Length: 81
Image (cartoon, rainbow, N blue to C red):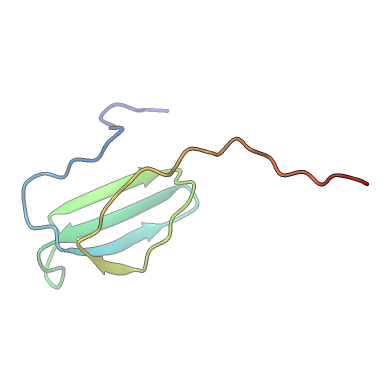
């Protein structure tokens, strides 16, 4: 897998990234487009390879990106009496 240019944290370049649309959403990739007005064009694309969990509408405004929380490590088990 080519990981060149990937970052642990996302820092967006300077600009107006208010409008966001989902350009492509497949089992292996989530591609987002951003710009100040997506009616005409977009100036930024973010590509997430192999996303584990995604919850977002097809279009949204002014998002906050964050990493998923680490697994709790606890297991629930049923005790027998």
